[in-house]
Image (cartoon, rainbow, N blue to C red; front, side):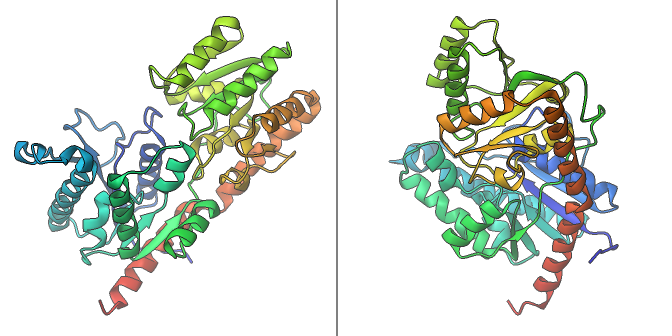
Length: 402
């Protein structure tokens, strides 16, 4: 079903939106959605949490800064404040967000509110019963915490409960992948709709570019355990130890100091000419990497429906990814890339060696299949599915006795 009526949408995000690739996945998603909605004739307004007013609107979209409130000195001196600081800050953020949205509604009638993730600052919105509310499961904290081997404390238990309350109080919940929707069902008993993340803008260069170097292997994204960066480094060590003619290219944020950075520097000290580490890069650099690299490795332990995989396939770049992480919904074994056992360095090495053994003709077919995956994804028009969900939420909300 397609709706032609204009919808006024308030998009709530905890990560400032930008279209230049300088922020993480949530900010990129929010900017992309807002731009597509605007192109379709709807009116999106982004409410973004910030620590201080932004000097410029990097997303070139209507953005309202929601300044995070700092707890008072009296509160800070309260016993055990440090233990519960994050839940307290989120509660204060939630109240300020509700006031900001009320103010916006006086100038522009808000038809629907989309909370772009299930973090608790939106609980005041979902529980206000003033607007139809859609909560999107872009992640589930306990999944990410398990992937990062992070211990749980009393503060985190409170945050988990707030996130659950927000989702349960929403009119409708949705998820970008069956992987996250299934976990939301198991943990919260919610049947979430699947609304895929829209693909990026069309690539400038064709998929089967002669610039692609098969032996160049790339990792692009946050360099942490959740994204499987440690697995990538172990696999790189294995291939370099076998004296294979490979070149590794890494782009992304890496904490300093950290064990992962120490490990990377140790590998680079022995193979300085074989590993290029760029650190955080802009979208133009990411595009350049994806257009010339042989394959992109995404070894995430958990993931939502990552933008970087969408961007790679839009440029005809084969992807080697972990299974049981939502990436197996994007990559077909042996067709547009390879899958390996989640968390297994040995399995990743086998997948990489299978890729390196491909003939130039087979690599060309895999590159074309990657772009064909992108073409099929565009035909599904996920932005239309999202607008339909807005209209469904409005109708359900209007007919609800509560």
